[in-house]
Structure formats: C-alpha cells, structure tokens
Image 1: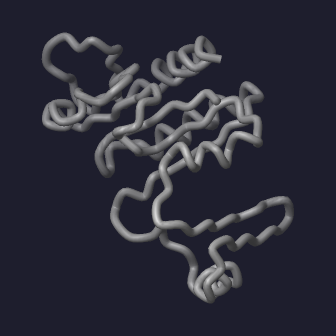
Image 2: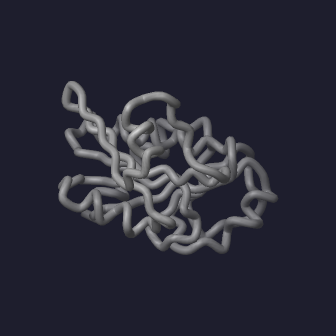
Length: 166
C-alpha cells in the first residue's frame, strides 16, 4: 500500500493539505483513503443519539450504519496502531493512503511548519520527504522546502513523488 503521512502541529494546515492532495489524486482517477489521528485527547466527536452510537454505548465493540452506499464503521479496542488501521484498508485496493498525524510512524512524510521552532522540534522525524513552511526557514535543509502559499508547486511535486513509489 502506498502510504504517505502529513504531520505538523495543531492548526499548521494538515487537513487542508490532505484535502488538496486527495482532490489532485482523484482527478487522476486514483482510489484514495485517509486516516486521521485524533491527537487532541479523548474520543473523536460523534453525534449523540444516532443508532450506531447507541449500539456502541450498549456494549457493541463494532457498530456500523449503511445508507446510500456509505458505510460508517466504529470499532472499539483499547488501542489502534496505524498498522491496525492500514490492515483494515488493505482489501480496499487503494492507490494511495494519506495519513494525517501519527508523527512517529515510518512512512514518507510531508512536514508542515509554522515557524523555526516547529521545525526545530520536528526535524528529527523519520523519512521526511518535504517541508511546507508558513514562513521562510533559515539555513539549508536536506529536504525540498515549499511555501504554504505555493500549492501549485508542491501538489504536483507530491503527486510525482507518489507515482515513483507505486
């Protein structure tokens, strides 16, 4: 599976980048999956009162609801590692999986940084392929660096990088 990560701190633009990258891949006819790590503590928000949540609250470890071709699945276990989630995606035969978060995993990464301080604390991450910065970074980096505003430059670059790994 061709898995790429988008990492950075809260409000650095990760979700916006994933949206743009998904749209570019879909325009080329690719089947894309995404995984988002909810790193803000606690469970992701879900609407109270919907039947699948009521089933889960009653004790179901798996609760799903289907409608008009959309399947929403909630699976409960003490811990979900990224590899566990990717194993669920394996039968879907996706061309690309974009993972938002899970900084410590070892897939190719695009790092979003708002400042020099962000870069100082994230530059040690494994398998960084590119940096997208809100402001110019000092010095020479061992990775391609793009300005956040230059999505016409970095989206095609990312798509080309993904193609070389397929």
